Image 1 (cartoon, helix red, strand yellow):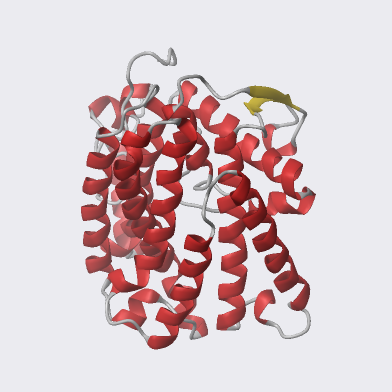
Image 2 (tube, rainbow, N blue to C red):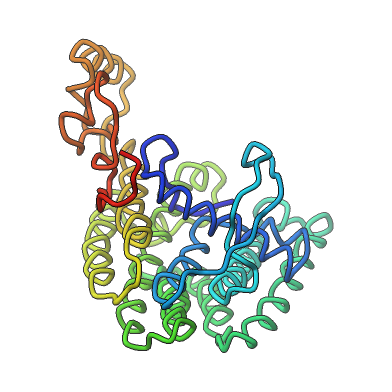
Length: 344
């Protein structure tokens, strides 16, 4: 599983975690049911947002079924979104296409297993079969897969041509995610949401691409691999500014949506995306001198957590959220709580 949107298990609202897991496990089983067991490897955290968006706009909650025991759930059964739901199927289609594109990208760069001429052939074959399967299911959902395949091809071309700006490099990702987000409005029968969803998808795609570049920066430098920041001469600080600007626009786009249920959408697209940006840039924006970290840890301990260093994810919370002697409640989540989840 990969992606940037991962709710905190310890401090997220119970209703958010339950609903998120229903969509996550539902995506995994939808991939299995429609594309085979191995396709479950394409399950990712960000793809399930499409399932969430489709359900949030629909006049009815998504149909659920009981999933069997799974090691990732401690061998417990649970209710998950049915693989027959069109939102879950769209999430599966896009997840397969993204995974196939990632494999082809690694093959083009000569990275990892996919980049090996002989031993990487089976993996490249899997990518090709996933692309065909995704296109077939996308057609049944009325989703034009060419926007995704063209985006992948354009991405490879931009990287080969050394695009002059970071936003030129992120454009294919932005376009692809925007199209997928907008199509959830068509699935739910809410065309008035299409443009706001397109804008939200464009900005979410930008953030996800930049975070991926920041997290891979050290490894790419060590291996001499392509990295958007290095290729475009973009500093980490400038990349962080672009993400912050995109977060603002993303929040406004989400506010404009007409939704039957807002809590999970706002928790993932607003709160957890902001958390992902902070997580990616914290160690790079702030000094990582071990002596400073030790000193900060001592002060945090002596003040019972009321002091938190700039890189701490708890720094933005209120006094109650920072203190070790207080219990975290929903109100201390990054995205807040609407008071109806019943977990406080």
